[in-house]
Image (cartoon, helix red, strand yellow):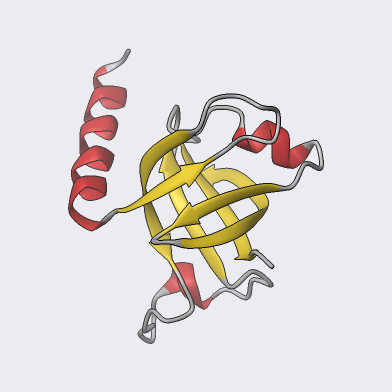
Length: 116
């Protein structure tokens, strides 16, 4: 692991421990339940003018961010067309898409809709 990777991991874990919510995922492939902390954004959060990340249009109302290794296999299962449901703060969300386009590729963003 490079020095940058170590610093990146520490920075993300620090933010995660301060601002995170607990997420619970039961993989559709029957693997064991995974519980970890995520950075959760929902439609009830207030946005400010100039908040570039949140001002871009997205058809998904909710999203959460997690670090590489937190939910192994989630992206692969979603990309394969499986319905994956994650529970955050007692509410269930269906994961619609998972991207790795943020920063160095070790931060994942899962876009969700309310589970019906």
